Image (tube, rainbow, N blue to C red; front, top):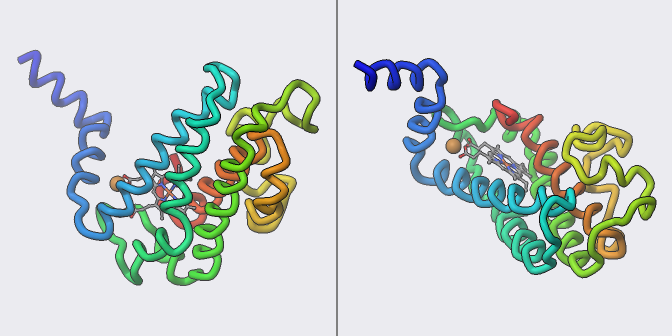
Length: 191
Ligand SMILES: [Cu+2]
């Protein structure tokens, strides 16, 4: 009886169902979901560090950057053959309608992740080191929408070389922006 209520609660919340749907992915769909999942885990490890909530470790930053570099550019676009969406995928048709922009964002992920990697030893921005550094540490700021004050294709304003010279927060921001810009346009559920 109690078990039944518990199962019903999970079904209603949708959590169990979503997990099941995604575990049904196979082939290239599963491969890219796994790759995205790895990057998501890397971002979760970085976020508290970038906010100063956990101790700063440049090796963790470099490892996370390597994960993203390994999944960026043609590594990523190669996992999206034309028409490879439909349930349980969240990939939108817009990917193949606007392939150039999709590929540019996949490439921007490499640029920004390489910048973050090279900036690892620069450490975090101190108060006042960067204009607006207060909001840089979060992924909720106006820049985090991917449509903010930078305009254009996010992540393309700042080159790898520029990011390499800045506090590591800037590279992290650029990576975050690139993830969310692509998800906003090319993924059904942005979460
Ligand atoms: Cu999935």
